[in-house]
Image 1 (cartoon, rainbow over the protein chains, first blue to last red):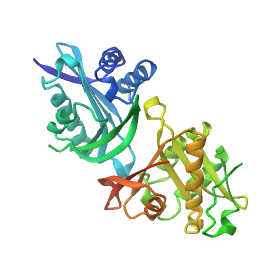
Image 2: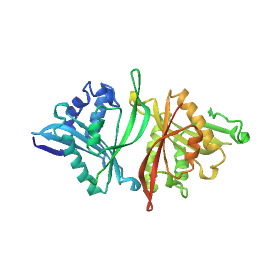
Image 3: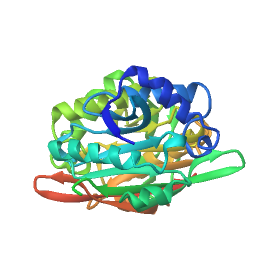
Image 4: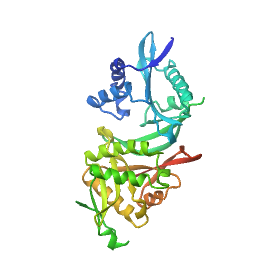
Length: 161
Length: 176
């Protein structure tokens, strides 16, 4: 399967909203079903510069998104925060890897050396570790869910691979 | 006007005169002056006036929603703090905050009082359960945060690059 990467467009919001609304994924997101997930999908496909989003497609159909939240502040241009999501039926097909390769290219051009992300006790933790993300901090009680809290773990990955 | 919680054991005469009120647009000039004071920006990601202006835009946005407080000592503005309350329901209980004290007034307990009052406000008025913060290695405020019961939960290596120096970011939180 050939995976192509392009910058996100506002029309991608529908696909992203579908992925974010997956009932199996929702408990591990910061958003709740409804307006919050819709706002998040819109935010992800149209971040303000210098932030940007990449969409992975297979046969022109969106299958994943990687959002890079970058800052123009001089002291912190060497790292950026990111988030990554792959459509449920395309996981394990190399989509995340392809998106990260695009992010690495962008990072090199910009002088960005490190990507940072966070997960909330997500079942995808191991998958992200396989992609090179290493945990460096865990904050207890960051997400409040029915019946308790989830911790937030921050991960860093070199963009110079 | 909100009155700061007072610790009677330290400098009671000054502390009794500290008051907190909601931040108003005119306070932005004080915040900017303190941030641009010599050596202050070493403890912040901003490097110059344009970046400080950009950062203060966000601070003042939160002020509109009652999430920024200004400290006064004998009618003089001496410090401020902002609570970056999250819009998502699952995250609203845990809040990142920032605090700054007039550089000429540091070391006389104002930071401690401001923190105490902010914690009380966050807990009682905003129903926040946990506060968290980011402080850069080598910044004196780290000792204040430790004294106030904040726990370090991680460090981000090489977070700031400032005039050839690499500075780690220390992450701390506290259940309130």
